[in-house]
Image (cartoon, rainbow, N blue to C red):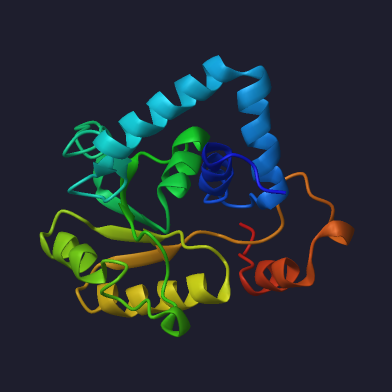
Length: 199
């Protein structure tokens, strides 16, 4: 059974969200229409504003309403450190941890030749241009520990090392508070291969 064109349009629009299939989109649409029209209005206004005004930082490429984001324009941050991440959500994760005070560079993805995503698509030339400016002394690779993330980290390592800049990789392994019997074999293998000497 087909609904009215506007309901069908709303359901179809909600399906663009990750992890939202036809049934979930239908539930969301009916919830907004039946029980929370005020929330729906607020959602539509916030979405319209964000789509119109949020762009990429000219320096690190994260999402922001300003030409240069608040992180890049903060003189109190360590401009000699640059953490390379795949997405703006990764920047948010680091910022919420409160443990990093350097700058970022957001790739907006990872290398994936099968999908036609090469170095140009993830901004490697922009990254290298920033490193060549000379202020960055260490690049910290924080790509995801997936096959694509590791390939991306390896490629960037080779490019940045050729410029004489120190390159490091975030640690991967057993999470704090995790129990070994519940950790997957890939994570355990990474933890063993990345072990460090105890002083």
